[in-house]
Length: 294
Image (cartoon, rainbow, N blue to C red; front, side, top):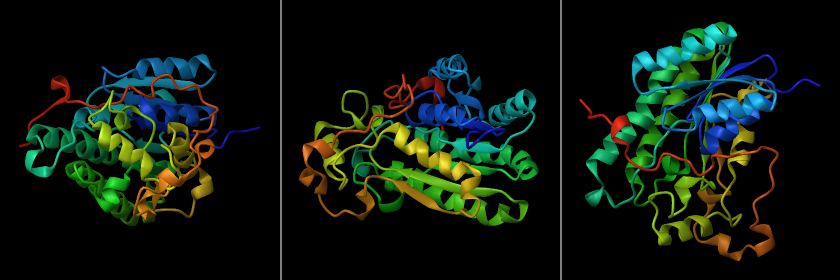
């Protein structure tokens, strides 16, 4: 039985950890050849090797995708290795700080603009000529924060709102080329970003994050990857310019409704994927990956 992505070639940015790892492994499980892309400091090569060891097709690409030549080299690797490009997943992103805006570090804002916005722009621009040939598609990582704004995450939400609008614009102008473009917009997901021990959230923020979704828990990386799979597949052939929220209902909620959920329903579902790097997310400023805005 063929997988839902058999014969497809995909690039997954930020593929070494968290949601990106789940997307890369889910796509490979469904038959796609995957370029696992990300910073050299992230477990990109490990994820690629884990996919290959389980019988899938994957190659790693490491570099700073916010730089035009690096983004172009990533796309070229996919084309040279597998002969084409069908799917671009713009998942790469950073979440280095939380603070009210008057105290928000300027360097953290610049870091997010570089790594959340420039990478999406350059990867999309570099991939489009090949996606036009394959009648392919793009799925980018939006966020609940980009839709409704979140206190102490204001600049982060701004970077995600750009991606929402960017994908909508791409979807309209590229429709005549047969290219679709959509966003997956996660709410709180069980990665390094939403735990006080591994990310910038305080204990109070972490508690609020878990209580806010009406479903009463974090989502899992695999649950988010399942929605990426649908949008990237031919099953979503009439879907473009859409924002798909995978947020446990938090964008519809006006209070800590998750506290009303019984404990047995708060348990995360067991997935099918073996994820080794869910808590390896990019949650601090790395000097080697920083850059001042001109």
